[in-house]
Image (cartoon, rainbow, N blue to C red):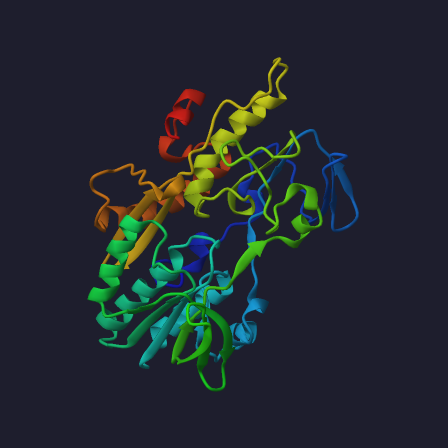
Length: 370
């Protein structure tokens, strides 16, 4: 929303200590390694901390280095290249969007998985609104995605493709950004279908960087899969190898879209299962299961938003069915007002339970969502 001009950056900036409940000890040090065999983590200063149960919620990080010239272009304050996937670069894009008076605007999307898979399209539509409505421009807007689809869920993909077509946005599939040649204003894409490179001129470029797990996880190969994500049961979030290691959110290898809504849904399930496993009961089998629910709120311009909700297998899992087949102004206000309030004022304090709202769900209710 910052890059799209809907809110100032200070609305979304908060220190970590304000996001923690009273009584929670915060060690402000990065994790260096995890010794899961001995129940110990080591931080960057060499300190070691033992645990009975470990929850890993490390997120993912941007890998600018995988696109030649991208980092240098992002760091250049005069370069018309930015991304909303970093606070500073999101503010840069806001300036670029406001000052743009050129012709060719290029937006990119890397291979999955990456955070909030709808975001590369959100910023494209918000920018389109600025240019066509406020500045009365009619630029050539192109969307280049490394995937063979505009959106993974097919029902919403049809809607999004029609919206893009109606706005005369050119959608290019299986094109992965591999290089930014700033002096020439050229974006180089790898056409993975034709197996060739394609050079695309731009006046402004919004580049979504490739993303991946934190490097410290790769040092503990016994808890991660071949791609470096924590290897967990996709329904219970328990490590497939260690009974006292858990993971949720973007750092895990659960096959759902990586969104905040998914984390909201996963959290009460993991906590239920963790408490059950750490109790003195004879069994430590988890009792609640996750069905893959995620939500992608997609700005599509004109003060409207498409609220995409689905679960494992890309099956629709809509809260407001049948009203979600089209973009709605009500959902726009959900995203701009309700969701930020929940994120900063309810979720950090354990007062929000995903689609259950403020009402803590029972294990039975959690399983009914699967």
